[in-house]
Image (cartoon, rainbow, N blue to C red; front, side):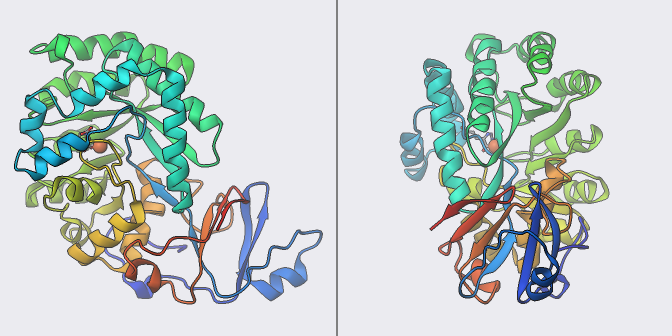
Length: 398
Ligand code: NIG
Ligand code: FE
């Protein structure tokens, strides 16, 4: 998909489809991509892996928003929601995010590492070769550090790349009720320098919502993060608006959710460099409307699609299925959906080395047993890759 724009609509006709292609890999990267026979004729001293039968190769998928480092389950929340309670009502009643915080605080770093690794490996088998993972179920300096370290440890022992984000601003912890300002100031003063020192992440996220933090709460927090050189991302406009405005104001890499965004927010995002990340898994988990992805693209915005995999609002954790479903509901072309889980997702993470099958990019790709790329989204996620390569290495072979 070389040459496709990072912003705005894309038609399937814009896709570059290469028949009988080969990929030459050197040093974890794609060194050439082109007709297989001429690649083979010109290459010397190469180890050849020839795929038998028809295969479609796509760039490894990039899931730019997950919360897969947690303990416990929220199956009970899910049942309560389906019985009529809202996500916010459950949160106010002591369930929701706080329930996962309680369970995650009880878990050891080792337990969290093992669980994160397991979930990441599940994504890898579905073709996801890069996964963003947020903290946010610790909500104290030491507990957030434990989670960030667990993600780092998991990353060191699996094939897929985990990109860590600090979401200490996920909700106001119980012991700081009514005192968001003090909590955030403590996090930015004491946790940010430790994150930097240990090299745990260069990304800061905040949940701007009535049940979490107001825009006013987040302004000084983001100011501090920006001064310290962190990249920013925002949980924005999930139930009420305000978050995307903050994202644009701080030139955040992405504004994620956007289910409640109106024309005003869509316009604002489209004019900015902020990537709009749709999270269809949260819409499916909560049984509510989807992010207005079509409108965002038509306004000239950049759309990424991520799973939001988390124990509360998005327990499914299947990026391809969710992206395909969003495509059907929002009328997105195959190219727009695939861009949303590849190079536009890479842009949301500020990763320039992946997301396309092109010379110089990481050799991250997946193969589907088919002669038609359209089959992939047509099967709405019920057609998984048969092979996955990460940095040129075959890491999954069904
Ligand atoms: O992106 N919206 C806030 N955070 C997560 C939900 C986390 C949870 O419910 O545990 C989300 O949907
Ligand atoms: Fe989220």
